Image (cartoon, rainbow, N blue to C red; front, side, top):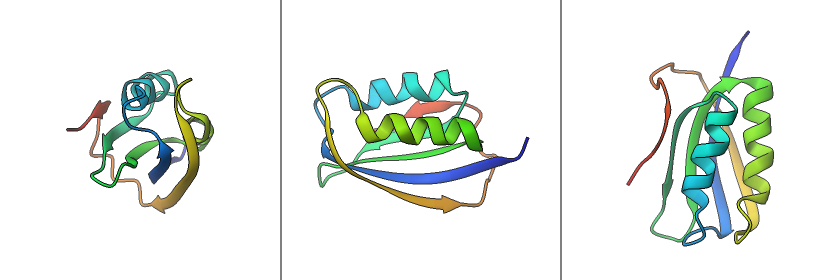
Length: 92
């Protein structure tokens, strides 16, 4: 299956609500590789690679987030698949 890659910027109440840890679980459920991290401006960024259907499922999850999050927008940028990551991690 063809692999795809996306860079995400998630905005809203997404820090201090377990977003990164929940995103890690969601990415692992969808067999994705990449990373998630908090940004200084209060947003969360993520990069993921996987099959188109798995990436789409992760994007759908990011639009909702964990129970205490309130996502207002998810920016999506399609990128070339680099195959650099072997698993999904939280970056600090």
